[in-house]
Image (cartoon, rainbow over all chains, first blue to last red; front, side):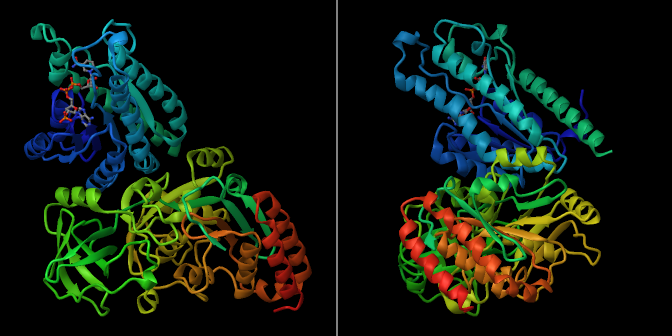
Length: 240
Length: 391
Ligand SMILES: NC(=O)c1ccc[n+]([C@@H]2O[C@H](COP(=O)([O-])OP(=O)(O)OC[C@H]3O[C@@H](n4cnc5c(N)ncnc54)[C@H](OP(=O)(O)O)[C@@H]3O)[C@@H](O)[C@H]2O)c1
């Protein structure tokens, strides 16, 4: 296990921080002293989680272009910069899940707008802050939450799976490009978790067969710290 | 000069003005190849606040526009120095804007979701201290929702935050964009890295560039907080030790670096406040060259350039700008001005013939810019006349 010291003062932004995996991340990051800002659309929920955790709550829709810089402004102003961005908010596309031939164009567009373009926009708006963190010798990471639906061709998961596959590829290319500026990006599949999103997609699933989002959050934080540690070591090496 | 009427960065031009008076007119992308191994480029990574807030002066029920113009205590978003305007918006030149309704301490202003309070009036009817009561999160959210970038009449369409954040924008600190940074993109930084050109940043809270009121304008810039990271300070010291050039991207970087200058040629890391104007005679202890926009005599930005070069050299820049139709203002074209060694200035007036030739070369490129060569040629003609007669 990582010691709490590693998280002290780390500046992290999480989209979709009021439910499921995102909420677990906000709780597990704030408890040991990370400075966290999170985003979700429903104001009452944002306020509740902000009050509970002390994290900085931001009401916004990552699928909307007009909200992107408003979110970026609030993230960077409240944290005084940014070390880690976790793009976690997600849209399922059509609910109930639909075959592609039954999917409306607009439903595909919504999934792409939130899961792909939204993550792209927010990352781009915050890229300057991340690069500043990297130059200062702190970490600079973007974690994009993906899914096994990005890899496997599950019937009924067309809009969602397509958006997540595109997100994974965007992440891989951007990681190659951003390395030079000290920013790393990776995509992580949290596994099948017992969350409202899962219940919406597969209402008949047996919750006892699903992972608790708290466990996935702990695993993601572990990977995040590993990546930051590698960077810190590399950085120290480069300076000597 | 043509006021840049829209944020079109692709067509940008770049004038290089050497200390010996020679000039080169390059496409904006020429910035990639301007610097050599060892040079250190320093940029301002401040993101820009949506600092223009429209609303109502509650006691009079009259329209008011507030432009946040300075921090009381950076980065506390609840207390600002501010400039007030009466009815109207950026479509009217600031010079022609009516004054705000008469203000008194304690007056409330309804600025969208913000309930602001006039804390204190300063010694000018437009200048005040403003408090935005509420917790930090709520104030930031309201600013993000209601605030608009400060903008001027030469850009008609309303600007969005993405128009005024540079690519490297990190923490919201500036009231107007540190606009020289618009010339930077990630490809350029990558090319510099490959060419062993150093790159470092600082954060400087660039303030408003113009208020439209001569008395207030003469007091610009207001005090501007800045922060220089340890690593940037270390890079500056190393560059100075090996005799490399320090290139500032924008006037705000010059102000911060020179405010933080040590007697030994390095800079102090950490926070500081850049105060007062830089002008002719202000010693430059750190910066060797400035990459900046096209500024006009009288602006505080132009005054700062006089610390780099004498008026004869700056006049050459102005002439070349006119000849090649450079666009002024924050989304316009740029120049790289190398600091003139103080003694060179007199020497250089003898090199007029050489300068004229360089100018002709510069203007040769005008045809390529397209559609404007005729009038540009006329200007060149007039300019050459002036040059010949040594005016
Ligand atoms: N659950 C699983 O089994 C599973 C499996 C693989 C991958 N994943 C991935 O894990 C991540 C988290 O999923 P979850 O199951 O925890 O979801 P969840 O419980 O439905 O939570 C989603 C969160 O995102 C917010 N959100 C949704 N759309 C948003 C938007 N457009 N803008 C801003 N915030 C938005 C929601 O709040 P508002 O509705 O108020 O905005 C909520 O806070 C997603 O990327 C998902 O694709 C989940």
